[in-house]
Image (cartoon, rainbow, N blue to C red):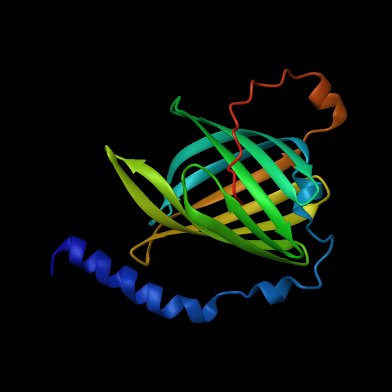
Length: 197
């Protein structure tokens, strides 16, 4: 058996065994403070994170500047990513709140992102288009956001392709205080919210 075939066999075995050990969103129903996306993601935020491959090796580090606003049940998140290798990316989310459920779209999201909040936690699932060596891969993301306190949130994301784990993302998001906002210049927004959601 080749090295690649062995790795695929081990990954498949892990994929088949681990789902039974996964946590449920209901596990967080009573956790406080409760997460309200339209309250946490409102104004300006900063995030720091890292991407790991399937083996756990850190492959990328980044900072993200986020500007968010809501009009009634519809929100816009303008995300600007600055990677340690010099690459920059942006994403413009349009999010609709429906009780404790959320729907979202963005330019590099296939279809809609669907999520639900229980207690301090959001589980958000969607397919992200990721450019890799001149091609675009559709990567399935299982996104978990945990509100730590009113100003801090931890985001853990598992990434899969063809049902197999390919990596994970860990992110700390912090709301900027009024003092921090007044000392920084807002970047020009290129955010054009998606229509029809």
